[in-house]
Amino acid sequence: MNKYLQINENDNVVVCLGAIESGDEIALSDGTVITALDSIPAGHKMAVKSIEKGHEVIKYGYPIGRVTEDVKPGNWVHTHNTETKLKGVLQYEYKPDLDDISDKIKKMGKDKNSFNGYVREDGRVGIRNEIWIIPTVGCVNNIVTALAKEGNHMIKGSIDEVIAFTHNYGCSQTGDDQEYTRKILADLIKHPNAGGVLVVGLGCENSNIDVLKPYLESFDEKRIKFLVCQESDDEMEDGIKLLGELIDEASGDRRERVSTSKLVIGLKCGGSDGFSGITANPLVGRISDMLIKQGGTSILTEVPEMFGAETILMNRCKDKNTFYDTVNMINGFKKYFEKQGEPIYENPSPGNKAGGITTLEDKSLGCTQKSGSFPVMKVLEYGDTTDTTGLNLLCAPGNDLCAATALASAGAQIVLFTTGRGTPFACPVPTLKISSNNRIKDKKNNWIDFSAGDVLEGKSFDALADELFEFILMTACGEKLKSEIAGFHDMAIWKRGVTL
Image 1 (cartoon, one colour):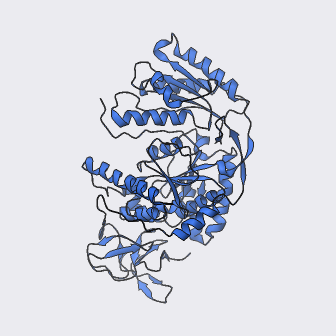
Image 2 (tube, rainbow, N blue to C red):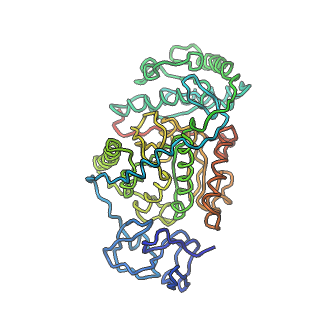
Image 3 (cartoon, rainbow, N blue to C red):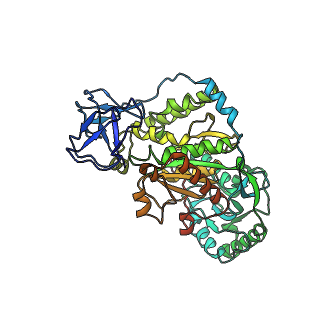
């Protein structure tokens, strides 16, 4: 294995692929030999050129911050001598490569593939046939959990599992928070991965069932049923009866062969390290491109982890209106930070820094690799469901649970979740964990579904992308992921305002 990786020929740092001791030598492609002046952990950066105090550190061909002291070739470049350059709300100019955008749009949907899924009444396709129990308010969380436990003794036919998705909200919220809670709940109630849904309310909450129903618009009464606990003499008995009816209705559902154009994939990273931006995230970017070529849809979120790399996405917007939507999303999120009195660069996390990520620009340039190379076709507000094929951007925070729940709400049937640190987390839809290195895959094999670490061993991105895409199709056809086997399911709603 090589000792280092220079991502872009213009970079003045390289990524150390293994730990480097002070005094070790590396030979650059131009024949220059650099002697390490510091001991540098794997995944961290080493300077290969002199960088004067106040000048930029270049990685991925873009600045990721500036050094706070003179740096010599061979020095470790990290948080002790580098700081962010990020600022608040900015003015942006649309600078697209229109020929490239046009060429890429012409390629969308040209390739063909298929998988076996559940075709729903609205034309969307599920990759699971689950029964979901969704509370309108946190007060009934224990009831829905108990109902799910009983319901799993009743499953039959093609039903995968009965799942309760607990959350803390639905009451004592104000303004947009209450509105977004209702939209997220309504989106999940109508999600195609659910063959049937039991909505459980308390009765006195702000987002009670009667308030929530208009957000559903039309729905199949055989597939979506409601229970108001305060109106029931025995909510467990009534709930089990309703679950039985849903299971009877959905248990006969059968998979059909459908086009991969029906597949919607969420793109998310968490617990990144110095390898995430050079292995797992660009691998997922290739998957996004492969899916879009087949007429499918990918959704990129984590807006704060676009800061510092946002112009790359902006210049890939299909037109000026989409560009302005992206600008509004980015600047709107920065204003949200400023309104709360928080700096916009309050990232990376301690785990990110330990793994080799120095600044938010460093993290963002790695994070946005997941978007691949196709144009941005639409920008979604939090709580929106996509109706546009191709690459979508979704307004949501970087928090794993909130962002992944938002992706499911937006219509993703599966989330590709890259990680350099490992996590047991899973969202409302199958959450495919992709490690950035083989060490995490080997250590936490009960968490990680696929490793991108073979890229560091010399395997080509194309070969690995073909393997991962085939794995995704098998998952879409019903093969369970590690978190599903463990029975892990999480959801979280983004809270921004006052709690009464």
